[in-house]
Image (cartoon, rainbow, N blue to C red; front, side):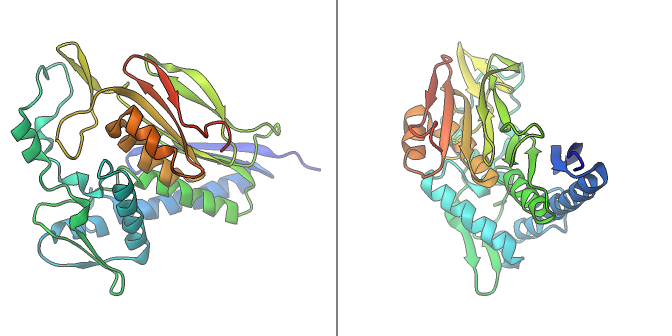
Length: 310
């Protein structure tokens, strides 16, 4: 019997580093399957990107406050799922986050103070998922107010990873990993039969993991301030902005979400950073088949109740 091989490909998709690893009968089969997965991610990118004027997302944004825009059922469904996540996170996740006024934020050495409360609030006044009007019957989306903008940055990579996995499985690939810029989904086992494992980055030394998890048939996404942050008056502020206040959040360095869906893991990681340790854990502990690891600014590690049993 011919020995299986691991086939790997790394490239830039959706403006990010994507890596595909598949276990297949031979390199030709593996590469053909990866080609199909790349085609699927590219298709999703064309739907969701805001860097192309003719994408469905850009058309929705152009018509904000003016008219509904007809979109594919797939886009309607993704927006519906996004709104549900906005509801359960009380707006800490918000698909209209693209409306933020970015001129306030640079997060570099020149940033030595926070904007005043009123200025910060004004920067997020157009962010409100409740002003996304969906008409499922006619498959249209309308943003209620001029200047509103949808952005799929908080969920799109995870969705693309899930779809790529589905394509690969449909082509007979029984084991693999899709890594969408750190949003990982795995299925099956490594070529040696061992479970896939992933390292959780040490927030102080991101080139080395502080822990490793077996995540076969699971997805994991990590969000945190360890790569981009500022320290003002001795306090560390993440580059993540609270959609309600317009101010950067503090208190959490890193959140890793583990669950069966890369889309859900992607969408929950950043809002848990916003919500903080206590509220974030309370939420995750209420959701079946979802676990999380949180590292706070004092490097304390917190885990959800079901971390070992998902």
